[in-house]
Length: 136
Image (cartoon, rainbow, N blue to C red; front, side, top):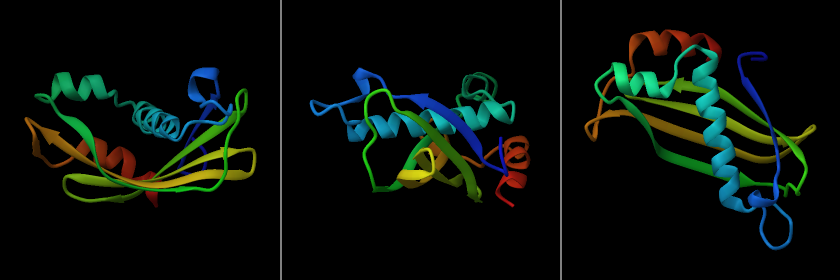
């Protein structure tokens, strides 16, 4: 964690690229998903524990806005930056960036919703408390 953001380094492998050796656009979605998962781990919350201990609670992506600014290449080392932005009753919005050094290659705003049995539920208070100070 640095300045309220989770930092995740990722190396680009062949499987992440398209025929031109540039990162395929859907690979960025996987990278950002890993960043969101590791943010939860950093505040000592595993998604598998939430699911098992809270009656099937899970997070689903409700909305994502992505700006593709540049291309990563095979063997690049990227940094996935994930920062809580807004917390609501059953949802939270996170700001994410995929960086190569100081260059922002992809930026995204992602809203995830807490659900159980296909219905939106309030984000647990423990998780809310763990993440809210990070967004301040």
